[in-house]
Amino acid sequence: MTRLQNITVLGTGVLGSQIAFQTAFRGFEVVAWDIDEAALNAAELRFRALVARYIHDDVDGAAAGRAEEALNRIHYSADLAEAVKDADLVIEAVPEAMQIKLETYAALSEVAPAKTIFATNSSTLLPSKLMDATGRPDRFLALHFANEIWKFNIAEVMGTPKTDQAVYDTVVEFAGDIGMVPIEIKKEKAGYVLNSLLVPLLNAAADLLVDGIADPETVDKTWRIATGSPSGPFQIYDVIGLMTPYHIALANPNPRSQAFAKLLKEQYIDQGKLGVATGEGFYSYKKR
Ligand code: NAD
Image 1 (tube, rainbow, N blue to C red):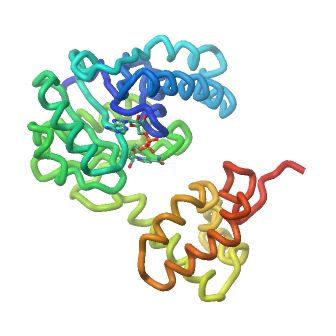
Image 2 (tube, rainbow, N blue to C red):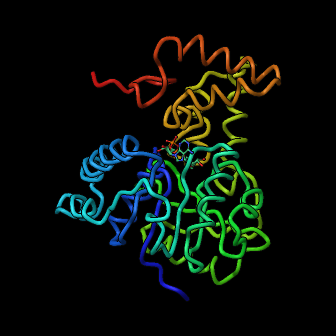
């Protein structure tokens, strides 16, 4: 099996910055690519903030200087050809828009060496919809992380019918090497494993609230006590942040979804209650 050494991450936003930093933290050389110098300057700030988060969250060795050292293994580039010239693996985390992804892969396929494996972190676009644009469907698959990857450390690995098994196995091994628990998915599935489980739970909780069956505390208490889970669905909504579920609900014409969007907007979002990040959502996280 090929050992991957040089990793390039495309896009240094919320997830791309975390993937690049975690990979460097685990000892790999990483090139962080983004569209321009302004985006790379923002990336540098994100990486510095991650050093503090790793230390705060007591990630193994972070406080002893390992988080700071990781910064030295991250190299910046706004030139795609330069960014991927030695890459064994490119992890793509550009915006979740089909057109942007297709254009990114078209450009990437022109400049990447033949050896390079491409992996998409897309949450909602099936890799088979992107594979033709890569020019190398056998060396392409999805590698999907969860936000705050140093804490919620799963990496879902999902190929297409064209992905080479040896490439798949190499990426599974890489996921383990960067401290993730690889989740091997045998067939393509929208939502992977995590969201295939989580989204129906969150939707069911929203229906219970919208239909006036039970309040968030009651729903969460039921789930926690009866399943032993540490969090109920409304606590999970608060961690995700209420803007994402609001946009998803708003885009769904189903009357219950519309009612949930209205409730989120009027009772929470309009009052600045966006979840854990703002100190209040369905619950208050403000220090007393
Ligand atoms: P983001 O908007 O925070 O970051 C996207 C980055 O891509 C930015 O730095 C932007 O400058 C860059 N970029 C590269 N090419 C671009 C172009 N042509 N036009 C505009 N920007 C360009 O997005 P994100 O939340 O990090 O999501 C990135 C990918 O990760 C998506 O596919 C998303 O589905 C996936 N993902 C996100 C999360 C999450 O919680 N945010 C979780 C898992 C997976």
